[in-house]
Image 1 (cartoon, rainbow, N blue to C red):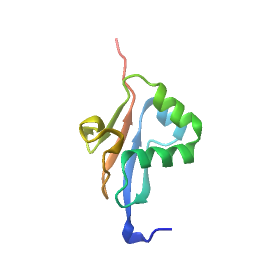
Image 2 (image 1 turned 60 degrees about the vertical axis):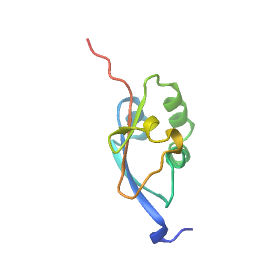
Image 3 (image 1 turned 30 degrees about the vertical axis):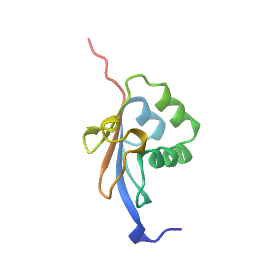
Length: 96
């Protein structure tokens, strides 16, 4: 187990179908220093089970934002996470 000084805390926000799977709209998750977005997704899969991974991979147009910026512009799934950052999982919203 890592010491507190080698951990970061990330705020994760869930919207739409993903919120239904997690049962919460927001939560804090601790990860090791140097964690990447892929590490966060692995942790969420461990906690919420295969339905989380299936839903994330199934949703076309899913936006993942890190501190308000599209993850693909920050390194994709290898985008680094830092202490205090916010990660948002936001499915597309249809209207009419």
